[in-house]
Length: 178
Image (tube, rainbow, N blue to C red; front, side, top):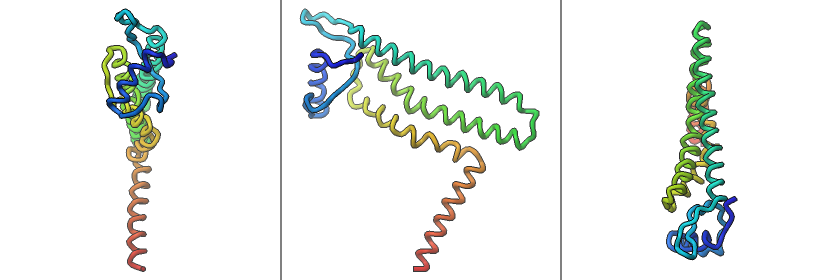
């Protein structure tokens, strides 16, 4: 939907040369170029780019709504488990907190940066090299996504700490033996 056009190429050419010292022929890009200046000097809104921004925004918003909706349902369901044993209640709270943090990670690393970029396109605000942080934060998501349960759930946390401490002790004893 956001295909390269002569107007978009010309606009990106200037940005690439100034900000990145790169020729447009050396890169391939995909993205909305919403406000296109016509030959007569008037701005024209590209409907394909606008459609792409609206669809991406709806997908982003629906994902965030699903996260909050099912998080709220999970929280409400937790209330019905309060008549269970103290041990089960403690485990359920740990699992809920791990789920909460695990849900915040994609919101912070993916949804908010993408929402910012989409909003900046609509407002014709040039974010420059800040846009590359979206790529970095999206790449960090798989690596960070698995960490919350390891630090929030007590049994996992104890296992990780014991592994780190034992590895450290084992390495120190190996150095002494040599």
